Length: 378
Image (cartoon, rainbow, N blue to C red; front, top):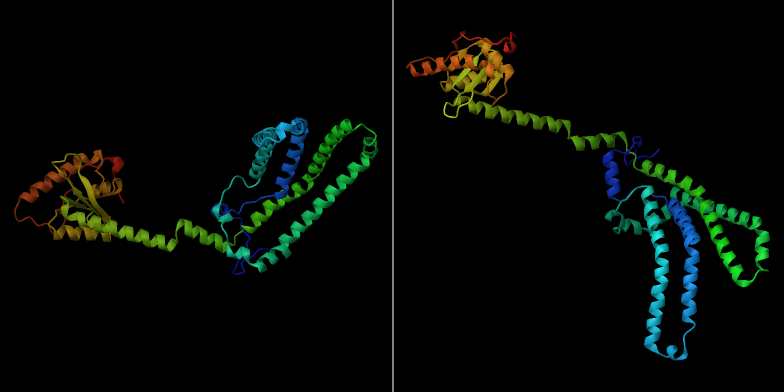
């Protein structure tokens, strides 16, 4: 079982982040044997279908090169132009075959690991130049795997080659008795087929190597339980840090809310368990807004600030609970409470105009009707 630097066993599959980071570094599963199988098989198939045309075209170029007249041979300009024309004509015939190989090379690499371009994989690293690290790679487990793959390819290809020669021994002997041109033509076709058979034999190695590379890459990226835990902490944030942030946010929100209490027009209380501060801007229109609310200690703080700033305190338990449970800070009151709050504000505005009114304690005010859907008895 693989272990990390702290000696912990890596038993957990790689997370999505670990896989993404590995791809950025160029660490993706690749099977050279799989790519080699496809390249060689595609080469054989390309030669089988395009080889005849390519050979005939190249023979035509060669024959035209050997059929020059004497004066043309001694004409430097003509020879250069003839040479480049022959090169371009040859390339033109070979381009379809080369395009096929390029396409197969790209497609086969996408089959396992997918498309991935990572600068980190091609950036020179001093560690890669360390001869000791190189010897470790050669004589390590990966080096042994590569050795077994090489031996496997040799024995598989050699075995198929021997089998083909034994099966076609009579044909090989008969070729010597054939005229030159048909012998070359038939031999070329047979060699292409032999090449295809030998390429197909590599499927055995590729079928073993491809799953092994997928398993090996996944095994290298395995993580210990502690690494998974640390990664989750890094992504989601340390719970302790998040708790401190939430606490700081609550404190800031509380400070802003308490700073808005002196601007309220009235504070409606339970009278001790709940407190709701309302502000009504007659010039802006709209409904009264809840600028602060709280229960127990927070309610006590709101009442204290209200007393210090001579904000009227009204004791209306049913209305205080209804507003407390149906709104949030900076929300307008529900439409169902418009009439009840309007009565409260009208009463408060009358109190404010009376000199000598005592605002140090809640003033009872029970003349309000609360809709059943907003009534809370707790």
